[in-house]
Image (cartoon, rainbow, N blue to C red):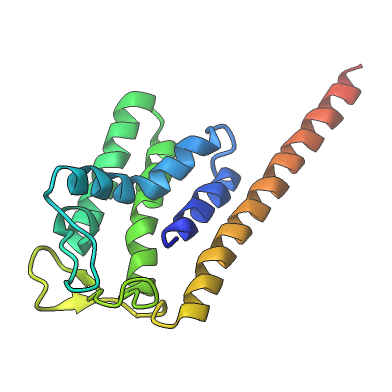
Length: 171
């Protein structure tokens, strides 16, 4: 299942946002995918199929990736009043576009994938295409997920150790 690398980025973000529940960080990293699923459900966008190219300019184009990132950051700022957190959330959302740019076209998963459009015109699409090969794609997806989980576990353990040290010093 492609898109699991984004979950790894969400897990890893716990290191820079230790007070934020990890599920919020994962949702931010997957927000563009969530938007795509909603738009697909509404019949507005669709993934690549065996016979046709994708159409997802409102979720997965480069310009919309920037827009969703800015909107997520601004909404976080309005809700939390926390400037640092708003940057973290905005960057997490943007990380989705960056990872998709590195991976696309994801021919290992979608043989008719064309890459990321700038917006709605699929005449010119962009991406480094690192997910063209099946083995490399799976190593990349699972590797990023595992790296994120390891960073998350190390971060949580460090916080627990700091709490334990503080509690023993207080007594």
